[in-house]
Image 1 (cartoon, rainbow, N blue to C red):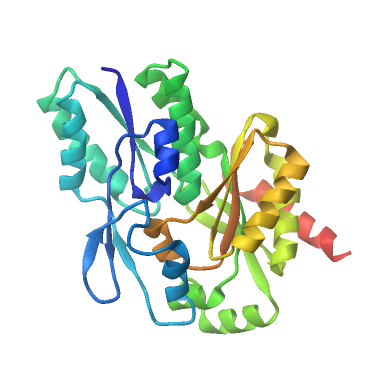
Image 2: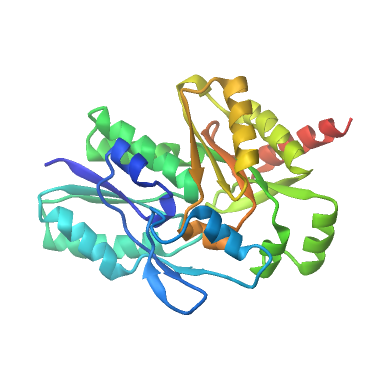
Length: 312
């Protein structure tokens, strides 16, 4: 029967992309709404649009909270496929941000004993949101090439640290609201138009490595940064994701197309799962490139050289 690739709701892959790449199922975390009720997270925006979701957070006291995939959910979804004779490759949100990977591993250990003839592999993606989407798609492409589950697992483990993020997050008031920056920094950073720029560290967490002044400058710095780290762009699917920053995401996508001529650019909304913590104001590109350095020393030097050069 082959194997299935099962991501979780942090992957931000809506139905059209899941259908296109053959993703039959996913694990649902939980979202808690401001009115106190909770629901399993959907990838498909059935109850509100992305603009409604992110607009509700902007300038208000509205906050959403999320919880990792319940073990019962993982057990139910995994067993559904094991009973059909299918093996499982599970790809989870970064363990630096959630316990979903650890919980999937615990369920997998239990079910390997119950289904000794089946294979279950669990991947800690060390990525989130649209970077996780890119990793899942790479897994699907590998599977579609005829690779076995073992070959696909080994391939994904070997490339996950090659996925980069670059772009800005400019709603500093939201970051202050959730405690990621101080109110003082948010106030003065907004006054001068600070747009933090980030890539992934070795722990699978998005880390600020530079600060541009203004969104257009941030987009320009993103292109220059990509020039240093991207590999074989003409063969790549590059994602551009945003949360309530479509105008700048469109501009960034146009610049990427003109500069790198990738195989495809996919525009994506940041989903509800990661969006509860990201909030409005993100515009980023996600691409394959050189492996992220151990301490981000190289990445920090490159982006700060770029920003310094833009001042001249």
